[in-house]
Length: 323
Ligand code: PBG
Image (cartoon, rainbow, N blue to C red; front, top):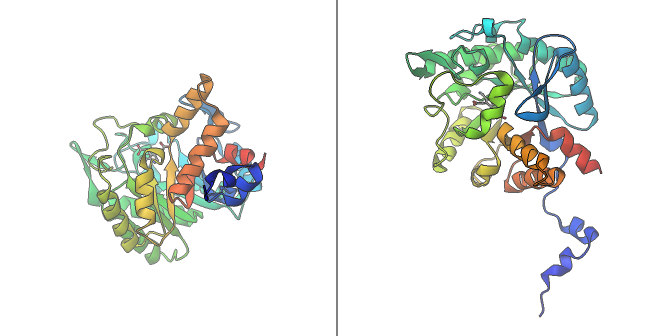
């Protein structure tokens, strides 16, 4: 034998020396769920250990994340039922919960990259990402609102807007609207390859945003397709996306790799609520070691090509990396 591959696996030290993929806190984007009130910290039933926070407690959370070395948060808000309609009116409210959350996060940690979810579902009486006419989610009217919404977030201080809606043409419309309003430093992280996935279930519990009728298959992608992900992503880059995203992550590692090899912008991946819930559930049953499952999952997502990972395990992962 002239080649013994096990030599490079022999001790922890040598394994550390040859490790190709190393997670660091700056890889993570921490999603945060924000709700109205004061001193509110509500656990999400299908996401044990994850919470909706009122603004005051969110500010504490943002400070803690910053101190841990996490450099980005992605904000989602839970909109009160009485403010929901079919036009996204509340999404444009300059004093809405999202707009206040952006300001609060920037005040809590001025260096933090504050990203915001741009889509109508939390604000929609139908729970859809766009404006509904009959049974249809109409594209172009929705895109106009998303562009206005992005400008409103930029005005409140968002660093990066993250459209998660999968309407056609929205990246260009958002970039143009930002330019027209002189927000030349606001970036766009496009959910470019977002699949119609069952793994978003717990998130919809968190925001009470499940679609009231039908599903999201006329706008989110069919999980049977890979080349379509490339088509979507290349168009988003053409239209001005600064970062592109694949979502979910673990069942789509092939898509992450395909996109990483095809674009020159940073690639992010969203390790979604259902992926979090699966690990939590198996760990609770004693069937999986949670800490090992978390690090293996996140390392695999990075190895597949993700430069950034949005994950509900962001804080836990930093603690594990520091051990
Ligand atoms: C909605 C949105 C969803 C998620 C992020 N933004 C849900 C959906 O498309 O129904 C899912 C995130 C997760 O499951 O963690 N625009």
